[in-house]
Image (tube, rainbow, N blue to C red):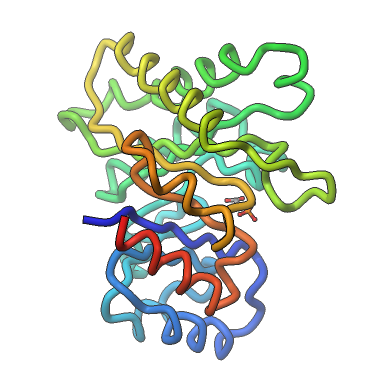
Length: 232
Ligand code: PGA
């Protein structure tokens, strides 16, 4: 069956020509590309096998060709997306017929002070809180566990072991049992994933796929990751 790879290009691709070239070089089934919003339509025009997502919910994302929408990514939370804003974006995404990818994860300080579970619980409960208002039964939601201390943006990023990732994802699954309404859930791990360490995350049935950031714009590296994931 294979595991799905979400490739978040972040802001690393600067021109339309680069975006189109990268999309053409990596285009494959089982891959979801998240180009910068400004290049979404151009990328949609050239991909044949990959699916597309928007890096942050946007009202025109569906018409531009996206099927998925990241909400609550660390890049957005750090510039002011509160749990309330994340909840609104998630509900809007579902209303538009997009599949939301709710990103959750604790900071290093939160981890070190032992409040990780509380942070995850709050981000999930509040992030999903507006779903109850919609009359959509069991919408599909991807939950991406991305501990901030493992995201490659920071120079002192640490690797989150597959065991820790599974442990946290198990906790997220448990939280969903306490909701008064249903979601169909899938689970991703994200944070400094490369072709060298991807194997550990692929060997567990608890993770449905990976959210890959920095190395997803290096087409050979992304292809290696995709190749390993498609066989897992
Ligand atoms: P990274 O990013 O793979 O560069 O750590 C993951 C993310 O921020 O989605």
